[in-house]
Length: 320
Image (cartoon, rainbow, N blue to C red; front, top):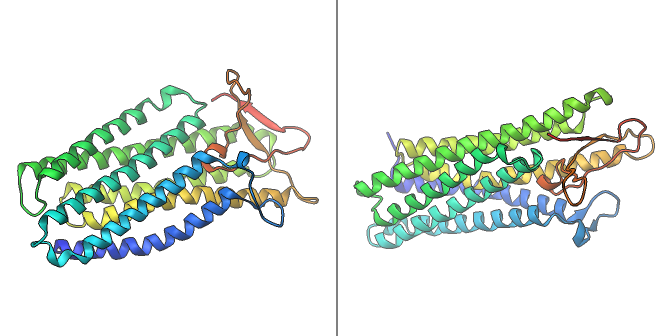
């Protein structure tokens, strides 16, 4: 027995409100990591030149967009008893929320592709497929929104069928892109870690990078799969699954930033007298105007690398 549309929307709103509370906590922790220097007590604000503005901008944009989606969902839920009297208003609210959700996903997928590009030494051939998938997702999103604006969600029609088909393509592409990029990032970091393992004692921090990447990717991928299944089956649970997905995107993004910050603090503690320095891998760009470009997780998380001063391997340069 399926739930009524109004019950599904209300349930989705409750779930989204709960997840949003967790999201707000992760946002403030991520902002603290990006804007504050925790390496030495007392904690101070970072200099403008030390702030990773791209990561900070994406973090704020995801938060603002997610907050707008929650507000729109709340308005839609409070007016659900007037759906038949204000059908046009309800349709526009659904359309705006669909646009809002699409922007959140496209932005998250874009930064995921960027991370994959950075980790693969800016090699274009590795991101041709993700770029194609992203473009396909954008096209299907536009088609879905156009036919959603033309259709009545409560009355079966040809426009409604095309809308569901377009959103099915969109969610399928999103899942495929997430799996591909997450696997690629994890594999490339693991590959560099394996190359440097012969010159290292103990487990490298790059292993934790792989774990963080996989964990955040799984959060995003699993919620996207649920949304995709709900769309394919044309179930009213789509209101619940999409509400969860748009918030989980931001949480997964912030988890990488927070985990990288905690890892760096641990490395700083180990670098104190009596501690053990941690090897940092450096990816080399011979043709880059700046010479070496420290990738590691700096471009991905906003955390600069910490270099060791041990004898032996100080940094490993490798083109991948």
